[in-house]
Length: 464
Image 1 (cartoon, rainbow, N blue to C red):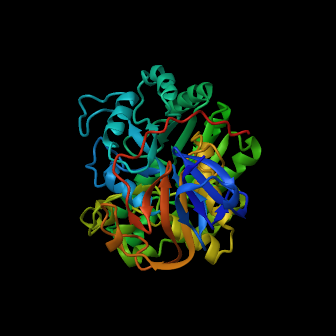
Image 2: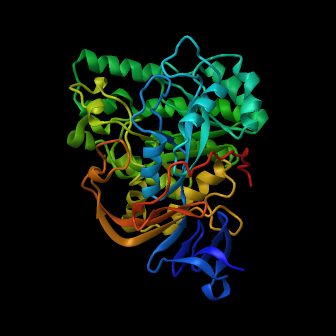
Image 3: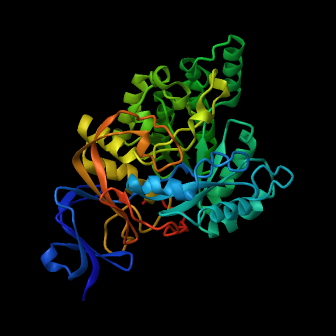
């Protein structure tokens, strides 16, 4: 029996350790792992000598069609966003489907299913696989009627905000938690106390403190922690699985840790982002509003604390919260006139690997666990985040000894800047494979737009 591809001479990295072995691939699946002499002959052999062979990175927090596709024009398409992802070793992302149908059409607010259809229709040109979170943006009782159908369609996680015009009240949020608990689905939360953030921003505007270095004061760490505490209290009362998005500071991480210790891993999980583990608020004095995102970059002490919470297991996942903007949309005289969000998909793996392994002496397995295995497991992406036989042949060949200096001139994303500009990192993506097909070979894009597929997800069991 012959197979299509064998990846040889590499060091395989799982979430628990490393081993020197080869990987045989056919029909988009891993069919065997072992010594090359014991594997079937292959039509193609990929030599991974000196490299790590990891499961493809799974990023469960990206915005490919604008942070709010109903109102914002998309700077990033699925084609450009997935190209950036593939170059960064990312083989699966989870994007957001917002309630509604047409961008900017307030007359027809639409349903979650309309939003899912809308988002799928924009994804035809993706190089990599994708799933969707359903984003709840208004307090419409009709929502509860469609939730079972949405879950049955493979969209098993639901985002809510505690801030912005599309945030929902605690009362409505509590009702959603109860229904999601019944369905076994996951609630994912952007938590910042809206009244605190609004008032702090008003004060700064009145005082004409528009310098980007003042921006973090408009969204203080305690506001993130307050909202997380409220949401978590309601979620655990309803026995609803809760996933805290983009945890940026010690105060918010401590809230997650407290609930997790009391109520267990089966109910409470959390993520942070690459930038919250590598960058602090001093970046605002260097690149200004190009670094503006919410929650903001925090203090150097918060960076240390967030990383420590990752190591200790309070936080499970490292994502990007990728949003692409052009400089023209980010540059502003006053921070309140700038847009929120930063891009980083293309560089997230090398940056985090360098930070975790090279600078902090964590293991490569720690990187795989937080960037691949855990996000796949927590969001019901069966067959992803692993190199086990009979799973999808999503993998990245990564050279840990290569050194590269990041430059936005290399961006495949529509974004024309990088928050990591000039940062030298240890580690480089050599090949990226999605379901057995190389989409990046020798650091160059070779995949065809449209290779990516929608992945219907199961309702995960966090207790196993």
